[in-house]
Length: 464
Image (tube, rainbow, N blue to C red; front, top):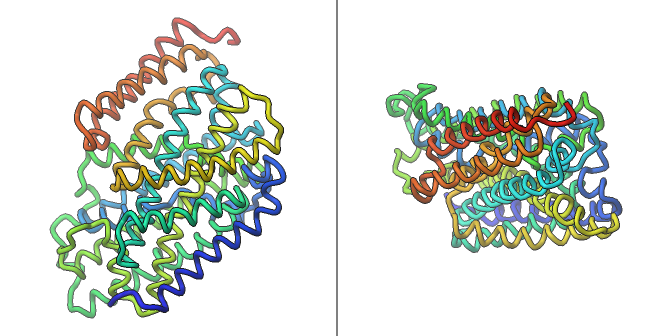
């Protein structure tokens, strides 16, 4: 079936609801920096867990998992399982250390731990990561919008992306949190409950069974050990480092909520991974493996099998997944540039800083639409983001939380060295495949660790 007027009405009402939340949030969010960036550090479990889960599970987790399920079966779930395990590790290892510091950004922590130049360098690296995460979600938004409305991918990017830019710029983290609560509810209803159940019934109605899936679709390693390892190296470590994740952690009302709530969000992610991958497997059976573009498996499947109105609700659920990650990544990028690169160099009032973040949300948000149109493949954008982040900052950050001996010089040399090796090796292999190849990941991590340890031995911190 095709999208009906009722479906479009449901989707339009959902978009208007997001904009309304942004307008309502603007009255309180723009007053102080704590309000705009961290929702005044007052989130309870009821808001914190859905917000954390929503920011983690975006376009790659939803469309990407369905695509991998379509192509490889249940082993496609490893992508989001590794992301979810990284979130759990963030709760257990990172949250307990950073919440009492009352910081705003990960780069700010690195200045306290090492030096101001380390803060500048880290802010640039992390901003590249968060910006590319935003781009991945805009790609997903464009993909679904083009399928639903029958328009070009480029126009779909502009329509959906501008909605995100508008409500984030208006309401900051309060807007992001409140919209994420709505988005999490729709994601749970649509991706975990509605589409797997309706999809299974639709496939059964065609007289097709799960037993007719290709050989290996129920093997947990069918996607390949090298791919599983690359997901582990990129996402397990990367999810402990992202400013979008840290910024959510710092919204927790206290350390206990930050730790337990983050772990709960990670466990939710594992369930989400299995559900989205299963939908991709059902789509393979329903379409007979004949889709030209597997990344469209979930939206096409939803439109095909669901009745009018319900299909619109399911499309809104997909938008929820994309926008809930896009908004967190966008405000994280603006926060890093304002708070870590501009504020240390130029004395600005709190009001000026808040307005600068809001303005950058608009500028970077629109810039990201153009990058999304250029890249178009969301898993490539995701690979770039996590290659840059994980290989450069995991070791200096996490070891720096628990080990006092490493110095600022050790951190700086390790970050620069691993960045050059990882990105250079990926470009040597070739665009864009090099960024998904496991060799630059391993080389980047190895370079970072070796340089960090040697430099720590040669130039230990004078405070130890």
